[in-house]
Image (cartoon, rainbow, N blue to C red):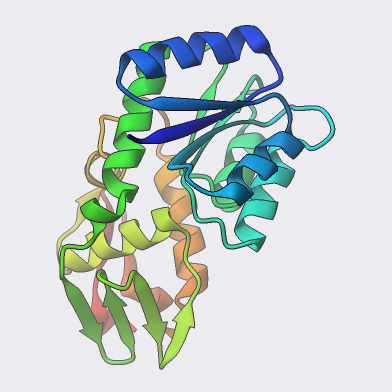
Length: 227
């Protein structure tokens, strides 16, 4: 059974989320602060984390940073009571897969959980495809990207985005289409989500960053000849 960790210092919030997740068929583990969350994650067996940004002792952003430093590649959905762009972008740049602003609809949260799990569970990833463009190689079985022989460190979301762009090379893709396919649902939000991930992805691709071309008024396309 899929196990989800709820890391939030508000018992009422944890109870509400737990009720809806268990109703959806998930196993739930709880942590009341960041330190407890890291202990649970270190033990393993967690498939996804719902991580509140504002927690005592160790806040959510610190937990996320520690996870990625320790190579704990569990997908993360950030929970925040703050709606400022800075908090959302900081979470995405830190390696979060999605974010939800409080107060939120429990049904929407469950939908986002399902969407993230659908694209991050190993059985959903191993599609056997690989792409090679000169010195840029993308292997979806080993989940690695190499640039001139060197492994590029991408977050799970950045990898999925690159695979989708490469699989549709030469095609101008709207931000809405990218959100539907990479995020796996009709995202209710702003285009900033795609733009932020494109910026981060380009930063990892070095000499191949220009292969991701901005199509003004539309979105983006992957053009291996644009290097």
